[in-house]
Image (tube, rainbow, N blue to C red):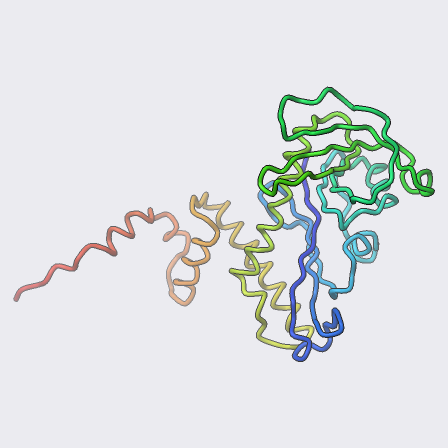
Length: 273
């Protein structure tokens, strides 16, 4: 079952220099919407919008071109994508969704789904139905509510899903894997320079973001093609050093880095004439 994560990140902009990107009264921003494929941690869909677009409203709009997922795929999301009408459309298309629920959600408890595992992280595994007036219009079928204890934050997380086959512990692991997209956003912001922009026009900003996405994909492709054992950051540093030199990147990547460090630390012998 292929696993995807849908999320967005806000790129802050100075409103005085980027007046076209008005987000709030005194703030400017754009949003980077991404569908991440966990098989290789690669973005399979990326789109830019102004900061005012709400996550679920952007995902529901067919004009934005969010692709349909393959059958039996798993989609993990944060609570910003709670819209039961849209979630039901995913359910009808055969997509398994795992999404964090909101604290003010009204529902009827239909009982325990299965016997709880011995793992202390799973606090509850219930079958529920929505109990508000939109119950039959938005999501007329049952849902599964899993309560998870996060040992790092010491908080309880409630997760909704339409899958009744996978174990609660597996669902907790899948939702925890959603953190990969946060690492992706953090990486491109820190190392691909999309927090500071060369131009101030809308076209210049969007172009710089697209170039950053192209660079990330090229680095990932080179790392996969050459079976590069070091991180993407190390590969980026190597590429930065030789980008203006007439040297083969692929040949350099074949050299063991420990051998390069030995050569660098070896003192140069003095020549006597």
